[in-house]
Image (cartoon, rainbow, N blue to C red; front, side, top):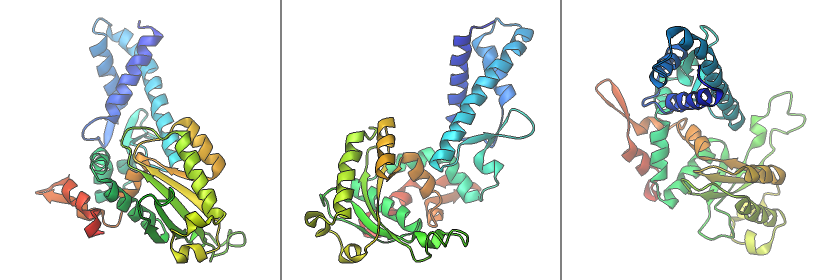
Length: 297
């Protein structure tokens, strides 16, 4: 028998191995995978002992898989894998389970390569990528500001009314728009801390209160739109817990690296970033990076 600490450590190791497989698999037999790892880690266990430990390991691995799914649902991104309803303990890649189009399925499996490509972008290119993501998600018109414009990297209008249903249109009119102001941080590793959100929140308040030193640097069409203001903060890394809590209190939308990748692989131009060699698809990082160079946007 193995103790609880060892089984927890092994379950974590199995979970991390599965999620960092290259390439990600369509289907994984979790029973067989865990049994194989048990035999490798504990070669002295008999077959009956392996069978006894297997259920415990499986439950701990599935717990981590379900926690990841819950997190992804909250972030509005797709998890890498989900458990099949039947047969039990069969792990399915998200694209395979929901029969996503081949191009999207391929890019989803290449998400780490896509993120790596974004990490290699210049600061300017990353801002253009963020502009593209906002535009394809309905923020139009949208303008990138000049550097050091009182903490505002972009501003635009979001036609939120066009996304309302018939039943909700009595609350949100079809013509309702909001003003978007945002900040972009090209930080591949360092997590965003509360002080950065507090600083950005101050800039958002200045826009809301029409402070002259701020709004004079923003477009006329933006200033003339008398609408509510929403802050959007985009980074390649992640946010500390304190940052997330503060942003919710200040009504600031946060987008991290995983969310950026989720959005970019759904771009209508994504076919330009994939090339085929024979029957094999490959992610064309060079074309991807060129798409967001200043002269190509």
